[in-house]
Image 1: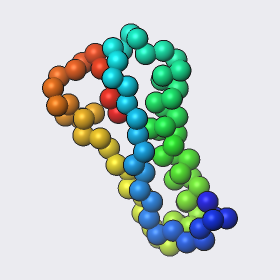
Image 2: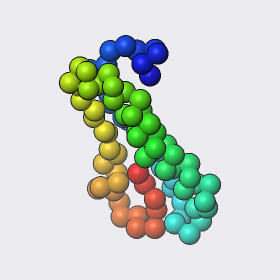
Image 3: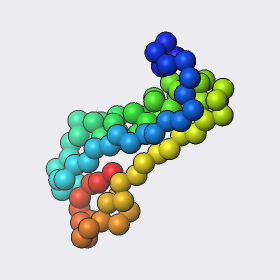
Length: 81
């Protein structure tokens, strides 16, 4: 990150994916894809920006999809981020 951007005062982590499939039908590859994107994508972006953010006393914003908290209709067998 620092090779491309020397300054950063904020970072917004907004990438995310979901799988609309019954829990039992999601394989290891699906879970890996979901975790790599939703969790580790934000971790890697934040770690890459930390030196510049610390220097600027910046902030990180993690955006969540409200569907994971309040689904539009009950879907207990579905996986959403």
